[in-house]
Length: 382
Image (cartoon, rainbow, N blue to C red; front, side, top):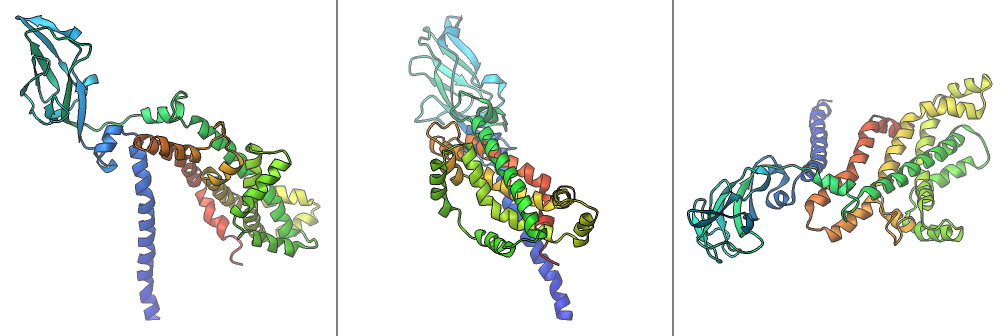
């Protein structure tokens, strides 16, 4: 007994360490996506998300004011200003006037411009251009600087992804399309499976055992085997590609797990409760709606979590039964795949789109997670 008792603390620490490891493994990337979704392109390119609260050194290409702003002082044409727009507080460590030598000068140095005149740049971004002859051209001179910029967070990424209708990065339509697919595809299987589970758990009829065995057998059938035959069936009966087709597909693929899970839970409810209700004259429908459904809420919530997560993150079924060439019925998973092809370098857009796609499942999971274990374990122990 001493050996067995002595192993318990070690096993407990192993379990705790494993749980902590899994939590960290999941939380760290999610936190990185969240922080990156509020950062700008330049900040993501120059420093990791874990340094988002610290200043970052960036190479910037800036321009002086246009020649039309020049003034005449003591016989010299002068253009003055600050290279940073909007009052940005940054510290320049090096600067140059050529892309081949971006670090040729230090703050306070004076450089000769190729078109004549000189320019002096200070560490705060203030500059002064002088020329005995008038500056010409329509744009200001380019100045390449290496500057340390303060941390910057913005909501522009979310506005572009969710609200900008004219943006090629917009996911607003895909977001609502995904909700249109997910909500009915979660509710319909629960409604149908709850009736079937009650019948298999508490009603006697010929062939009930065979039906239970068939439900268990369907759990191991890969959905990929049924995709093409089911699509052909939808086309033959006139459903085609659309929301109705994808709802029916998700309902069919989720039904075996729903019936199995709910039937095990309902079969574990007290028999006396059901029999007393029948003695009191309650019909099977009344027993189901007023007793079984309220008592089975943990199991219903457990399946709702699984079905919602599966349909929200689904790409394969949506591509087969929903998405067409018009792109009007695209879902978020497919939209992210498209962004990976067209915006592979825009990490701020990809991070924002990825976080938008996971925030709704996170809300659903944390709102209903207290019922998850209860619903899954119910009926496993008598």
